[in-house]
Length: 119
Image 1 (cartoon, rainbow, N blue to C red):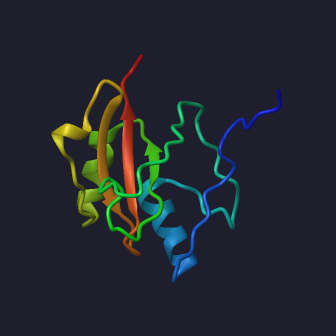
Image 2: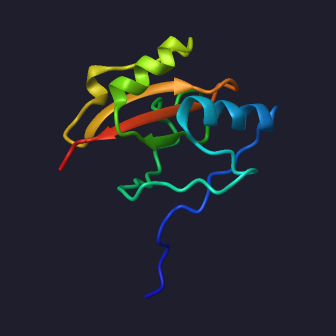
């Protein structure tokens, strides 16, 4: 049966698309797609709808949250905080699937950072 084999892109509105793309590139290493195609490392991807009443995604009007797999959560947290970016961590976010942290981009969009448990 034909099937979807991965996520081809994540698209969203921004007041300053070029500035926001530069922020993602500088702080998270996501290449600006207007310059090139970002090549991800192979790995798990979760596609998970949440209840419309969840608080997990942040603001009520927030319809989505991107989750990035990371290779060194502590190192990335250190770099982000050194750049003045607030990082939220909670013990209950950590589980058998890995460790999590959350930041927000300059336009207030939540970003979940996930370091999967090493297999």
